[in-house]
Image (cartoon, each protein chain N blue to C red):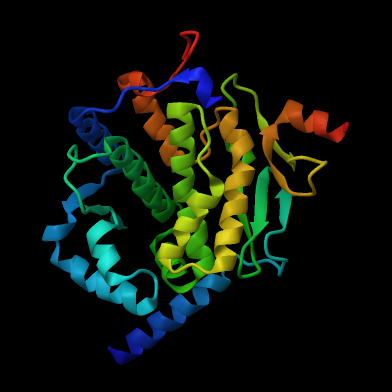
Length: 89
Length: 207
């Protein structure tokens, strides 16, 4: 019983390490394919939006790109046409 | 934008109960009265010990999802803010989506043992509030105020800053009418067809 508990505790403690690819700066964002990721407060990348699963009310697709080039490098999911326009700014 | 809209109607008790019934049927969940659930006292003590949430607050005011059981500290369809009861239904069912998506071990372990992961799960659940409020009023809730709610879950100040940023970066897509969170999509499928009058109408008469 005690051994089982120790193994369970070890497994739970190891969990946060799963899926952790590299360290990052808290609050940084990036596009990874169709996913917008953010660096969490523990210094790990985590997806915060899945652009490929979104559609605007008019049915247009979303892609990941810089939210507002004038404001900084943060990325988010925007309609593809808006991302294209941002690239031209 | 909100000034250009007429406020939507308040939900009735029957609508609140029908909405919860729809979501519980869709996700295979059960609603339990928190006051009558002996296991909640144990969970309260456990979460208090872990520093996740204060015991008194947990028992008195926090709706809680454990697996597919949703423990509520209020009576469905009764009280002051019935719309909030509908929002809570979506928030809690998003935790069920997270459980199904990530698996019991990763979800429970991550939620209990790492505040940044707990913040991520709760931020996603609170994004349902942002989306539903926008659907209803055409206005955006404050990302800062929503993120601040994570303090009650034992999240750090840094977790709150990241949560606020996630919510703020979600706003452009929400304004485009995109439902980002799976539970919101399911909820809006019901609201749009069964309770469209809850949505604010543009002053000109359109939806």
